Length: 358
Figure 1 (cartoon, helix red, strand yellow):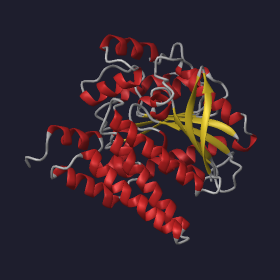
Figure 2 (cartoon, rainbow, N blue to C red):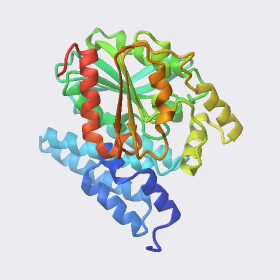
Figure 3 (cartoon, rainbow, N blue to C red):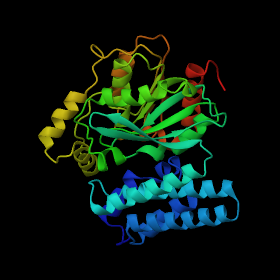
């Protein structure tokens, strides 16, 4: 093994495999360079930030030349680079915050170029704000809106490629940064010790308060799948729910990255407190019933989530419109079949929210 392949580098490459980088919008050349350069001994966050800066420069040059399509594509690629740069740090140290602030600034610039199709959203919750990014279809008036979010590390614009796929089907997407995530955590101080269903229901209220956004659906990825299911059980206004690689009964898994991310989301390193909060968040089908259509996605090669971990979401479905979709070789949240997965789920939401398949 190359001496430069330190345990930290190997951990980064396991947590952020090539399939995940591509799924979240990183260009292949950047993903390849990130793996090659970190394998040769360079620091993960520094390489990813350098790659992002090159894309930002390309975007600015294209914008100056009047090539808006190229500018937006390069800007989106930079967002993916910055997303994975900050993901090198699990706790909110100064470096992570600086990288995340760069990501936010670059996303605001993308909004400026979107002709109103992409906007920043701040939704009141308790004494703070929940942050998100709203992407509309070209028609501006959506057939419906899907609230999309991740779990312990993939937040907000990590799901920009999904938002684009939904937009092509006439649906809007609200890319949420819920409690314990992104700016909602780093700047608003909202952790996962709050009423999570109430928080995500605030995003649902935001959607329903805008007649141009249609009816709401909810799509949670990884641990976010748990919160999507609990919110769908608690909020009858939700018209369709997708759980992708969720844990009905989360526990502290034997991975350092998972444990550190769980600690950051709760705002404490106390393992007993983390376990108690996981227990508080658990989904129980005898209590949590879901009336709307339910779609559960599972990867047979997922190292974190077994099929039995997701069975309670299916057991809780009161609708006859309940679907389990399995990719036998699927990685966590189906990174390695991203295009097929996204198309399948986007079509599913289009048929449930938009009155027919796009």
